[in-house]
Length: 96
Image (cartoon, rainbow, N blue to C red; front, side):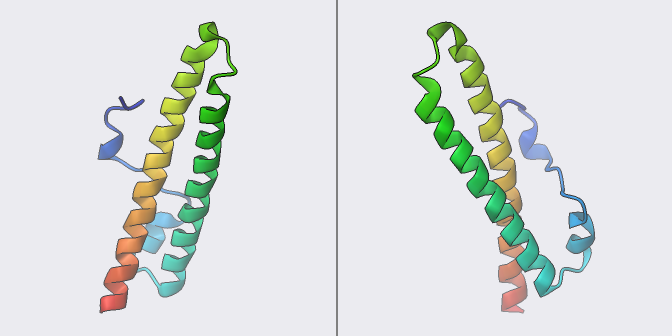
């Protein structure tokens, strides 16, 4: 279950990203792919820690850990969608 059931309907853009989307240069594309790849790796590390630490939390507090996991996974999926978008732009520009 998603933390936000409408998450697939929108993606929050990073500052400057909208401008890059209108007429992206190779530099813009590389920048956003690198940025989103780093952020995805960061979230993956945090999610790994949540999984590792979940069993160390008392049962009475696990609902909080589960909520954190759900929110982080939702955010990771948003970042992954943005990375995939820029990868598609890169492929499209490469083919042209």
